[in-house]
Image (cartoon, rainbow, N blue to C red):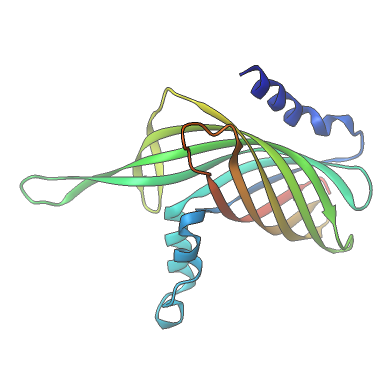
Length: 219
């Protein structure tokens, strides 16, 4: 546990060593577990009736995330980044029905929650109005579970599990953004392994692909 605590402190504190301009980004989007990536994004019937809305809805049912990130400049091309996010993967559904009418009253969902605390480096390929960039991060991830009530595509936690697990992971990503005065708007694709280090008892790797929209303040 001490080892994980030290790593967590380093991940949070690493970007504080720089004194250049600080920017803050809010991001959110889809997080699809590795075993479902092919099902969601490579369907054989995409050209025979599926719409973009259908694909986004189905992908959101697989998982989604929201987060906050800071970025500190080392040069025009290199930046230190750190952040925290909530990543959620609905795993199973329980349908509560009216015994007389058989109508569904409510849908309960068992959800795997990941809270990655990350730090890493970002490299800007084209430091111009349209910036293309790549990044790599280490993560200290808290894993928990909850029982949710479904509200449309997403769900709201009713009960949070009492047992927290902790793992060390990593992620890589590519993206692009455009600056509009003090505000930037962009998109990223990231691939993460949340439990690269610390797995126990035959625990499977938790890998996922994220498609994110990013709003940056303080350019």
